[in-house]
Image 1 (cartoon, rainbow, N blue to C red):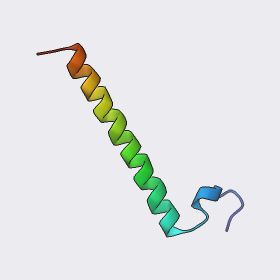
Image 2: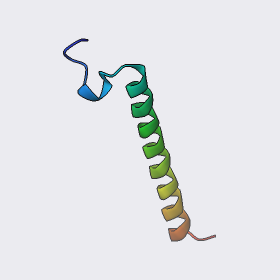
Image 3: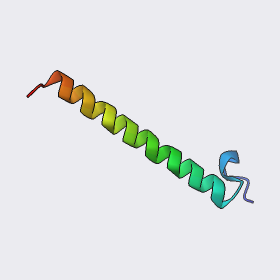
Length: 44
């Protein structure tokens, strides 16, 4: 392994999958939270 690889990705494909899944779920959660705040502030 390269020394510049972060420790949380040194486990191989499984670590990369878990990391990308975590990032995707975090972005989705932030988007859903922003959508909820927008709908609460600007009621139709």
